[in-house]
Length: 300
Image (cartoon, rainbow, N blue to C red; front, side, top):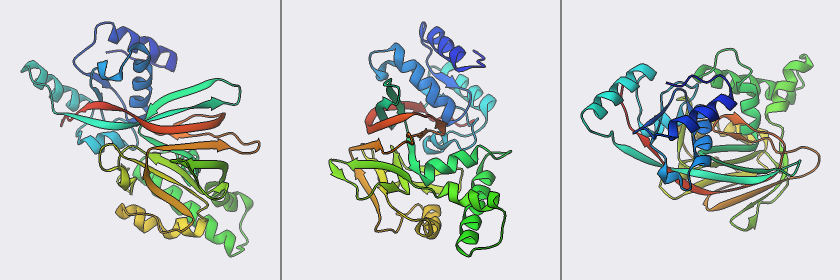
């Protein structure tokens, strides 16, 4: 067991672990922990296929990867179930997940290169997470609270309700568009004030509240969303998101595709959220289909 307190310590721990690769590399956390371990580990191999299977342990606040794979239990029960299988010389069933390969350039000229599973590059998805992590207790309840506050704030603003600016600003912040040029599979998405810029490598269940990226349900497909969808359309789309359906808007391009490129316009850099982790200071970002990642299906 390697207990890490900083990202620097995480890198050192991954390096030590892969010096003598285990049968399974267990990541004690959720989607963000898995993201960081995967990206530290890929620096040490020529091919991601050389990595041992990676096992998250439902220790996050959303755990969409564990939900997708069918991992059940908490960290101790998951590890106990894994050990029972390995002691019998049996490997748990391995699920191969598509990934996103994200490359780009930061405003200081430094390159950006990561693997992930879900991207909120701009618009409501990216703004939502900035509010989500301000909540004291994270999880499904926090998702519902942020959505409820954003909708109430937006409706109050449209009705010119006499409320304090801090309450009205909440909705303005969440629904504020991102200025960018977006191209999907060589076709420019109309407009530059995008209410949503998202990509998913698989269909996801966010905290048991929303089902997103249904077009990535099949292997080898990426689900892209971009366009000048406006706040009232986003609010009306909430029932569709709960059902896992498409968002009804002529302003939103929502397709199954191969590549999306995003270029920041003006002074505001891109600040993408990847697997729930925040990154900042990007001028451009390209999203393609990445390598498949092996995750054991363990039920604690």
